[in-house]
Image (cartoon, rainbow, N blue to C red; front, side):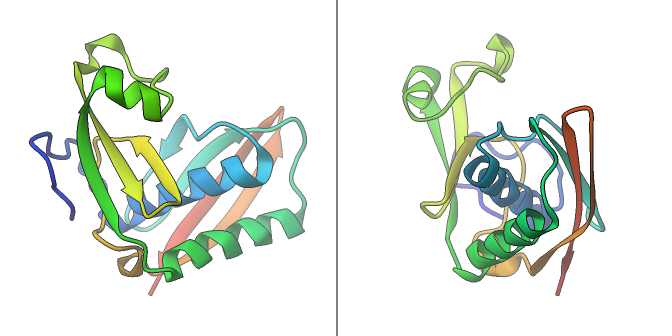
Length: 153
């Protein structure tokens, strides 16, 4: 688990799954041009994330998402955290989802050069620690895509 700052992780997520969620979020942004998941449930055995899309994805697109996530995991990317003043962090990432009471210090988590976002959770030190990412199922209704996934060794 990474802890490279005075702001240590506050959420007790299972670090490999939580790091995989970050990679999935960035992959969804890149593949579909959507926003990161704002609604999710991250657990050790299986997790889910919701994304809002104008149309449902094809099976081929979802296979591509799974392939891309696993490609990032296999790249052995380092994962690190950095604490910045909120004003400096705003120059690097979108902080619109952070409430003002989050404070003047923001913890950014970097997954190699692939992803950076504000986060208070636990993460692995290297993507090689995650395992294989597997989409269990997904469904699309009323503009919401729910992706359920797990990690395999």
